[in-house]
Length: 271
Image 1: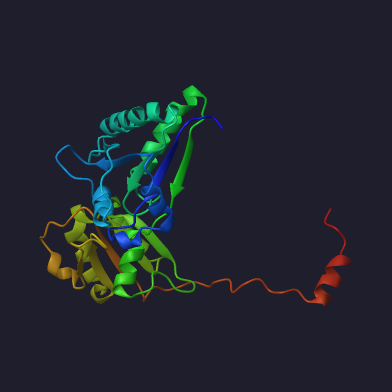
Image 2: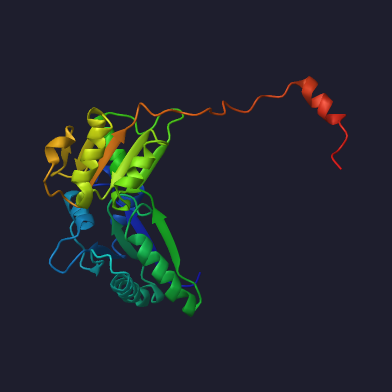
């Protein structure tokens, strides 16, 4: 034992506190750990923290927000990641466990990855002794499928989970290879994406979900009605693609008969 604290990424699910796992709940019951949670600006609340508060738990005295701004400026982002890591490192070195509260799943498009990676870089300079744990959670797209009562994937379905920021041209290409498309962060390109969905005749196969699982959750089944609307950042498009032409698939490993095995035993080895 090193006596150092542990950084724990506590996944909380997409918004419904009943989707918090028992493992995450056990961490939230602790009275000896520092709670940290991401905020996008000093004027905004933490979505992750609100999930916990809706569960009935009170905010402990020992807590600290960490600023992760919404920007594409890589230098600015790196500075804030470094500041966040530097703020928790002394506590970890002093033996304090630190919980980082994350909406959804901590390994899926989450701020926890930035904190973990930056902290590991700092920790390498002090011996690399700090342990890091990730508690998995329910993602927004799995919660959305449960809400809509449609399968995320079946049998041999292919699935793509892509930030819509890669553009409509990339999304168009995905329809050739995938049966289910989950488009994350659709806010900036929503109208263009609706045009693609309509042009491909997939309006009936598409659905928009905003803040899945939260009290303010919104589900829109006719995505055309969203044209011209400004939606929340925590939104996604779920599109089923039933008309995709599938290629030949391997049906499984053929079980070898005793005769075939015997023949292999008598074959000459390859030189």
